[in-house]
Length: 267
Length: 258
Image 1 (cartoon, rainbow over the protein chains, first blue to last red):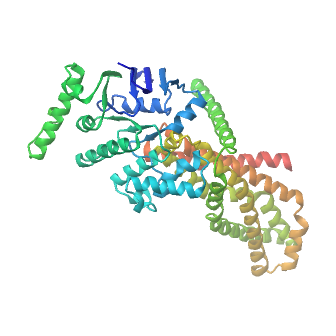
Image 2: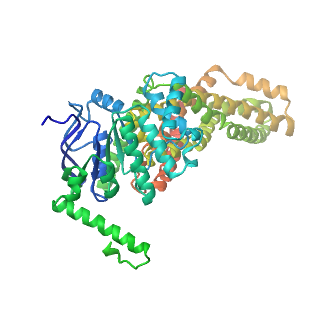
Image 3: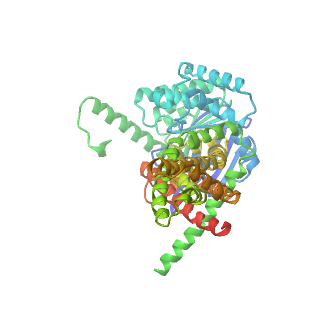
């Protein structure tokens, strides 16, 4: 079987804060064009992992390779090329609240390309149109709903036509309906634009539906990696424990909806 | 006690080094920053146009008070004809650059520190960096360039309005002949005084806006608070440190130029 075309290769990534070990040697291979999701409970270090990959945090040790080339934290040329080929969608969207929707989307083009103003505006409007946000191009982020802000952040992330998009807890704080909508949106645009999506989340059900491959981050290490079908049937105790806790949470939520009293420890 | 003093001294030296690197990095980012002129114009608007009312009001009242106080002191010695010289030299050499800088710190500097602090808190600065945009070049450099332009102009305006205020209280209220007042101003103020005024204004501008930008940019380093309180604490620190630095720098520059 031929080796998969890897876009991102991570080996033995480590990161500690003070004495607290968050990443204890994470290894991962992300194939090109794949919707890859890293699952894990809250506080497992998923966001730290993503920020180490994106160069926001400096890892203590480990190797990161992008498109077959090593990506050192201090290698300015490699980092600049990496940043021009990837985007990051933040948990809280990180939109510029004093800029309009169009200005937010145009910002990366204005600051990282030599395109003229007319072309920047055209590409910004095109990105907003693709995400059905063109009617709100003159609105400020504060005037948009949570779902619209998420779409605006995605428009900003894809306007530079990246090959890799990092999604940091894209559904954090959203209700179940919106969670489904956000995962559906990511899956739809990932296929439409053909970028590689690396998502970290703790939403198991939605992630399994919307991903090509999943990994489970547990105690600072990857405890499982495979397809969603393999994850669902795996006997791996770490996976089973995570699946059981997610199912227990689902049962508790259903019971709450039925009006039953639930003890916090049961959830 | 000795240990505490030592730790504080080391922290201060380390902080000064970090501040110097911050200013150096912001200045170094200017040549590579795209569409810098637009953001400089925005900075000129923030520090210039938006601060005009406070500069005019404080300048006018400073001149009025100087005229009033100066008249009663000079009148005791029969020298009220020198009122123009007293008001103009006080304003041009000291009060205009210092008070204009303090007013600009209070309005534009605090706004800059709070804006950058919120941008840090809401990950907007990290977002810029992940996009490959130099956050120092995008956020800080235009404000420093704007300060280079705006502070001298605002100081000149402050001095002009102050001179007019001195004339109002001296001539209209206290009966000093306007011709005597303005000819005294003309005789007293020399090119060296104006040069000192602009040197001070330029230095204060760069120092204060750098300090405000530094504190806002690093609002996440606040050890005593997080979130909104960290923004509040960093804004307070920015204003306090800038005000102290204006007065200290004023003394140092004056001691070299007098």
